[in-house]
Length: 507
Ligand code: BG6
Image (cartoon, rainbow, N blue to C red; front, side, top):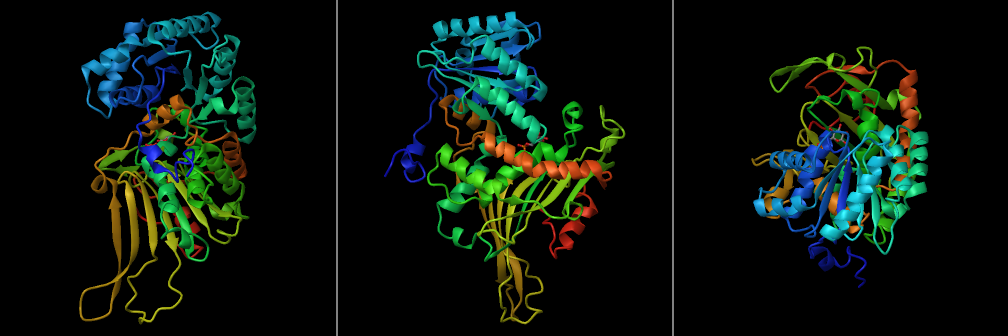
């Protein structure tokens, strides 16, 4: 048994994975992501004992802050958003390695100060020159930050130290811009130094797709075209765009969510078993399956984009997208997108994959439903099975994490009547261990240099290749269909499945 193959040797995986001497520099430290996710994740990792004692956190931003001001911002973010209880002794240790560097991205002096800060931390905190640079910045700023890191020698790995770049989504706007960005990044960093974030891969339930499929015997034999009728992948949100108009308008639901999260979920659901659980083997299988994705012939028939109109949500009135602050009142941006794709390989030939996502939908839920074909023959008369739907395995990614198996069962009584029932596995009931937040897991993996949960260049580019023709078609044809806030999307999306004799699940 090889210890480099943790799928086969789970004992390795049970050892606590603790980061070695290191630090994290966050660009865009005043942004929402940093405050709500990154800073709390760093604290939670420290609180769980998974960071080295001298761990250092450096903020880089334009604000005129002293180190103490930055520490206060981190403190407030941690108090508000951390998952683990606040412990003064953990905080006191963490604060020793906190620094702030003031400057803009084109400011050479600021990058020199950053270099000086890192050298000072290496001495004071024993970080050993090992630093990850987290680019939590608007996409247009990626190139300048990457080039500044190069220019000021910050990407250089000397005397056995490591330097890594963590890049937030969206990684480009289409295939062309993603390729250009990849070229810029790879001019400075080797592929083993680049970690592209898709935070869905950091979620426990998403990683569990691999456990469910490949650590068990009972699912995989039926996970194919012989038994599966179709697959539905849904990521629904009840929130609108909040304060993110500047980012969202012109990007839309398909670029924001389908290009990354949903196509990654599709890849994990549909890929073949990797030879091992290491990053290369996983990426190879994901890449193969993404490369086999086939778009529908008629994009007008098998894709739908929508935009929310005013409506009611959770008992309150919600404004329509075009009335949101900062949105162009003529905007054609999609806040809902549904697409049907096929996968051209032996396992999935003829099985449709329906992907949908949207804002201001009925409720927040992400799930993957594998819906099975009907039994080829039924010995029961048709009235007995009137209330029997299709069998399904539903991977509940969030919020009610777990897996549901749906099948028919006899209704108690003197006649033969069969109705759908569910068998549920819920994380909260089966495990006492708590799940780390996705960003905790991903930051730890960056510090450990473990790239399993990060999409590779090829995956990102293939995903744009899938999306580009759809976006082009939408640009040239009409406007998004309207749907009232608080509903399950435009009727056109229901029609799309109805034409195939199917319907969306109402999760
Ligand atoms: C982000 C999108 O990647 O994921 C957001 O940019 C979306 O628009 C968010 O709201 C949802 O993440 P989660 O983890 O809350 O499902």
